[in-house]
Amino acid sequence: MMKQSLAMHSFRSVLACIAIGIVGCSSGPSASSGHDAPNADVPNDQQPRLTEGTDYVVLERRRFLDEQGFDRPVEAFSVLCPMSWRSEGGVQWKGIGGCRGEMIATSIRITSPDGAIRFEQLPARSFSYASDPMMMQAMQAGAQAGGCGINQPFTAEQYIEGFARQDLKATASGIVVDEARMPLARKLDEQANATAMQFGNPQQQSTTFAKGRLSWPDGTQGIIEAGVTNLVNQQPDLMTGGTTMFSSTSVFYTTVTRFPPERKDEAARMLALFTSSHRMNPVWTKARDDFFTRLGNIEHAGRMERIRLMGEQAQAYAKAQSDASDQRMRSWEQQQASNDRQHEQFVKSIREVETWSDGSNGRVELTSGYDHAWSRGDGSYILSNNPNFDPSSAFQDQQWKPMVMDR
Image 1 (cartoon, rainbow, N blue to C red):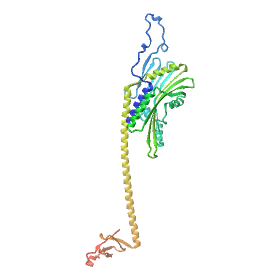
Image 2: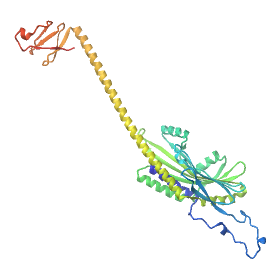
Image 3: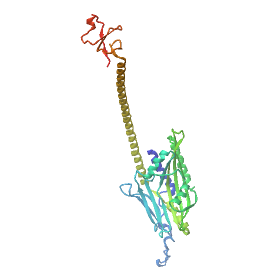
Image 4: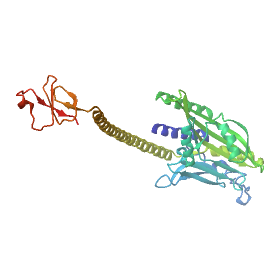
């Protein structure tokens, strides 16, 4: 489970790179090299007046920090942005008791100087689902307590349509597969599935990218992009003879760009700039993955300890049950023996007999009303109430042996 968790986080990091179009980590040419220097032959007061944003644009790398996850703020990622545009965002950590796929939330918001064009990269979202009703009840209880949402597996196209309608209050149209991002995603899916097969894991991974157009009631328009990964696990159901399906769905990449219709081309250029210049800090990425590895190890050890304690508890319970059962059996046997003796005494009183034993010939029933009995070993018996009577002396016969009455 720990290896699977780390692999999933690494896979999502790679997919994020695909989504934002990373092609390298080196910065481009400086802003000053983007236009010609002023003509030295023309006096300064006669130089043509150039306007930033119209005649040229200065791009600076905005660095977004993780201020919660480590002992000091760390750069998590960066984006090239026009100097006059406003930006905000960074990394937020949630509690480990919540949805694991949403534990680390990264977001970006970049706005043009006049606020007309707005770009957002939204935090990841995660969903789970199971075909088993009892498992679904547990998942729903977890979702209500702050865990992952509940939803069957879906594609990026399906997500865009539902997200636009429910969350953005917009209409999505022209939703298509983002074929530019799909080849590498398919390759990563194949590698993940081959690894799962190698270790006997029936889990299947599939990733889709899609994009579409947005329109709002106020007349503004937009562009939306999304990336979705589904992990589906089919396991045999020994109770029914069928299969039980478990799934985990991650919306690991979502961007929304909103703009006035007349500035569509400018917004599209800015969208391309933001996504292609996105750079993850490899040091932060490794630290994040190491954290999930340690967390997975701790949780695995905790699960093993719980299993051990549950095993000990089960053994103690079984022993207590066995002891209690034995005690009940002994009590029953004693009660039964008492009942048998009472019944025997009752029968004897009715039949007017007593049971005697001599140690060699076993038990024998003789006429009741006598306190002493002797046996000779040949089927002969003597009964007497005289405590001084002794057939050995009276008959000078040492073969008479005293008998004992069974009480």
